[in-house]
Image 1 (cartoon, helix red, strand yellow):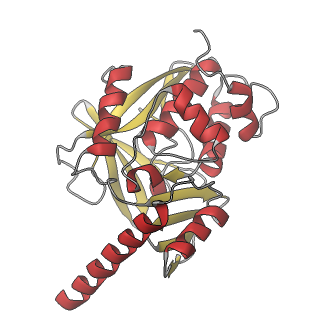
Image 2 (image 1 turned 180 degrees about the vertical axis):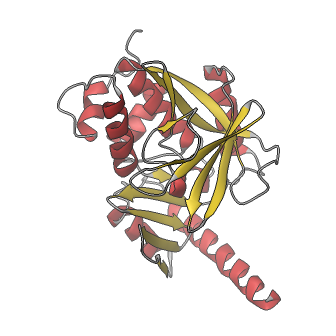
Length: 285
């Protein structure tokens, strides 16, 4: 397969590889661990209701040269191209996110993941699922708990589909449902268009950010910033204004913010909506 990434050396350098590693399982594990720690999941573009291009030149410019992160159609699309350029047998799959709702709900196919085959064994690789992203590849046909550096995960079957679950305390939470249906570039374009533009998209006008680290996860939901450490209680603070949110984006998530004068106002609107939602919940309690 011909190379897809014009900036492959810069990509590998960001992931702290001096040279192209071999396409084996140890490399895949290390790539996934490093990717989730280096490239933040973030929805600044959809907060601003700005276009989100997912062609590879645009993604390379945004992630490698503009100091940004992205969501699944950006992070996993780049990761797929990286794996293919390194010689992995890899292709994209799409799934239906069910986290927080009934796991049998027929939601839109709005999540892009990667299927990697190594020595005849298929693995799910995902670097773009926000605060619950798996930090290690998961054997597709293995049942039961699979360990990662963070939470344990499990893959169950349901007909021709798979359900990815993560263990949260003592419960197994369903995250998304996917199958092995062949996907093409146009499927990524259509799914991304829905996520970035549809009024019912869960990302439209929202600010979600996540990044992993050794034994921890950092998340931001609007003005709610949290640090989740393995085996410990989460630490959470409510940020008071847009300036505080932007400082966390820079300092905690190491993002270079876009030079958009609308960003502070967009963050303030999101904080006001969150405050109103909290007040309504307290009144109803």
